Length: 499
Image 1 (tube, helix red, strand yellow):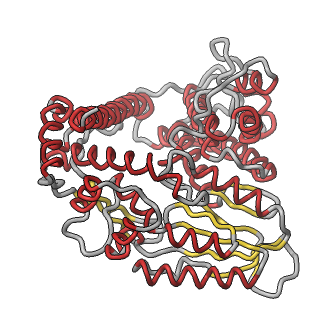
Image 2 (cartoon, helix red, strand yellow):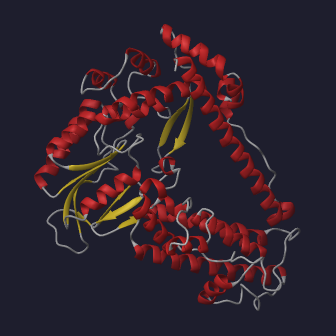
Image 3 (cartoon, rainbow, N blue to C red):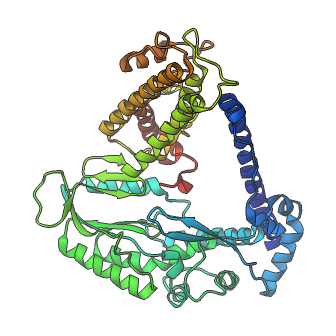
């Protein structure tokens, strides 16, 4: 396929992807507005449909325009690349706040330029991915975040005491030395054609250091930068896991972990990437809880949304908090917020052991956790009556979790927070609006009774009030892992999920 035809195909796909994303946003916004009108009546906020602000900067940011003109745009860009006159247009710089209080600058390129970047990234990766270390998991189609977690957890179980080196780089993408990067082009057996070198060069124009964050070709360059570093760690005989710039190194040998930290410092100096002292743990000893240790020790480490210990793989505390916040928000939005308005206009008051708002809350929580599956579908899969199901709920972002104690605690928390929200709703109905529903379902249930009644109460012939279970979906994920592997059970959006 010629460069022009290949570019036209990639530009078309990029535009269609963004159009689909925009339509999904519009549909979600409309559905949310309809729900708000039912819940809040006249107090419902006005529906406002936003477009990305950078669409107005240039038409080639707008996917609807680009889709219409994709063939002529591809023809023009292909000619310029062949003539070596192509240069990407200035990207829109988006400031993204970081969890630690800092900021990250993300470059949003015009759609045709993003397509060029993606095309050349895929070309470079296809012929060079075998050169990358098997312990490098980011930005590849043969590795993913869950492979990294599996490899780490399996290895940590082999030793009751393991020395760790944990470190974080400051502004990794923005501080890579160009001299160091370009030297890698002619070393270490990478295949990079003159045309690909030209495209890389024009995407780095107007920069003295660093690579733009937010474009595909930078992902290849980020891994290329670490090739020597990865090789040095392998030669040292230590195990490591690197996901972009998030790296941990481990070994049962103290002298080797000290040597590994020396390699980290050398790479930092050579590549121009500073170690973030505030976020780097340094060297520590991972051991079972309450085991004696002669140096700074810990019983677990956090990596990519998971917490890993000698015995367990758990959901990281920060990620657990995000899950709890989302469920709490669903309960507040459906059960509490409508009763805090100045009027109940448009509201259906619970009656005859029925509460539509409670039904909506349970269905939304179940959809969040199960991704559209029902308890029956999951149990049919576990019993073998169903051979295949698709996991899309929040737990499918954590398929390798095996900490059943944590999941049991989450199930207990879920039941408690639902029960507390129901009781709070009953008080608001009685105290604020003079509707006494303390005698009817679900308000007259104890915590344990609520679980049982929701499990056996049918709505339109279906068990729509069932309270979902983290432990149940974990069992289904575990079976899926054994029968189909990680890639068949992990959420399709795992690689872009904010862990």
